[in-house]
Length: 212
Image 1 (cartoon, rainbow, N blue to C red):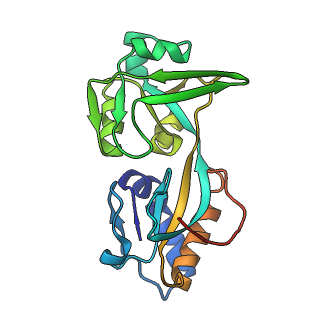
Image 2 (spheres, rainbow, N blue to C red):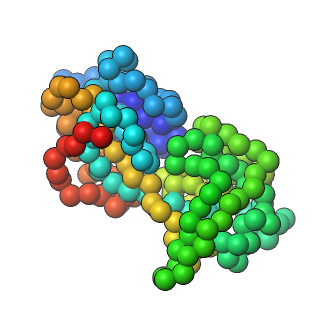
């Protein structure tokens, strides 16, 4: 199984004891990488991927969605203040996640109102772990999936900002190598993750797979 480092560390590894207890005949090998690993070349049965999928060599099933939010550390807010509208973001330092589902251009929505904003950041990172540490250090606010800062949002170490505004959510997919039927163990793992993360994600109803 493969997936992004932070997502797997925070949301998958803690669930593995339960999954393994339910499936005593299975072993799991985790490939943790923020980049998209070639499933066929690496011999991987299933990948958990976030955001828009563009790899036509995969078969995928959407299993959930995570809200995308603007976050900042208490330290940053105390020093630089809190944006009151999306347009205020241009006056703030930003930590940019320079990978899929990231970037600098964002479209906010509140009811029928829309606001397109380009954030400015002196630091860009291609790994979620780096984004997290930069936010904790007070280097700027960030636009990120809620899953990326779930423990800190729960504890109050990191704050949600612009809570009246919405951003497009980030989809969670179970991706399988196309050209062959997904193994029963891969399907079992996908179903398990979907069920266990139901409280953190807007879970999708059961459905068939589709090539992407």
